[in-house]
Image 1: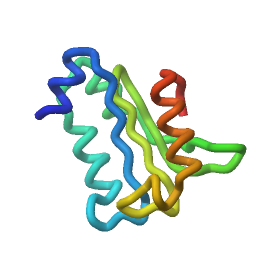
Image 2 (image 1 turned 30 degrees about the vertical axis):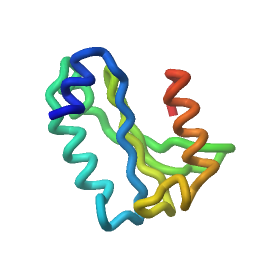
Image 3 (image 1 turned 90 degrees about the vertical axis):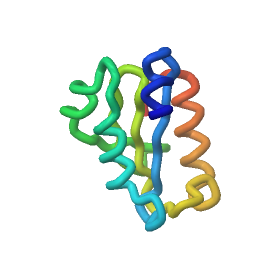
Image 4 (image 1 turned 135 degrees about the horizontal axis):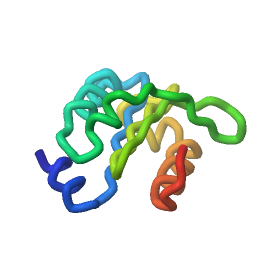
Length: 101
């Protein structure tokens, strides 16, 4: 899988999904992320999802290990940046900066 190849080359990967997306739903993308084979796979798989916030408001769930970060965005469908532009921007800015959500 391409994502696994990126992780093996120490390229950080962000996987995210809107909670209202019925095309590529968040449960399926979480299952995919949990099945990826990479060095920190066990740590990632065993981690519980926890809430993440923007401006003090809970906006989704997240978990991370090694170079892989997974996040959900509440009240967003398939076009997350369109549905939640402020939250999407904060997520990407934090991910690019290497800080936790």
